[in-house]
Image (cartoon, rainbow, N blue to C red; front, side, top):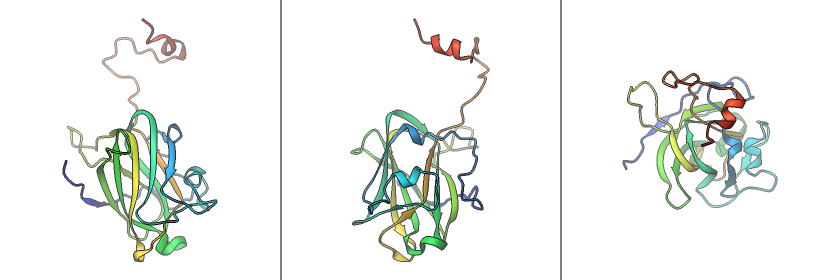
Length: 194
């Protein structure tokens, strides 16, 4: 597998502190979250509490990372991260490595992203591999996703991340080649019974 090239992340929304309304479903709650280290009161729960005034504060040797473990293999399309250089200065990540795999021992790099003084929610694709049509990027299928803080602005040692969301691909509604496109809860409940 070739090494991913570092790319600038696309800022989709940065003016508002609340998470942007995006078409991709938030699958963050399906996983167990852990961090490499944290100061008391600034752990992994601060990443998902929806409050940009709280943050994960790492405390320990580098590299710092967030590990997200799903109970089954899931399709992961994008990450949405809240960083604030004006508030956090040298604690703000300037480069992230994204790894994915079936377990903690077989993670592979899938994307590198760099930031220049970010302030707000930044949404970017997890994969760097294009679809067959070339109009989008493929989702990554994994049990485990790990976000590694490779570097901070101004060479900072510890890091602050104010929010993090994992987004799945947009689900196709009304698939054309399904001869029986029943979507009601009653039909969905019995669709796998033999």
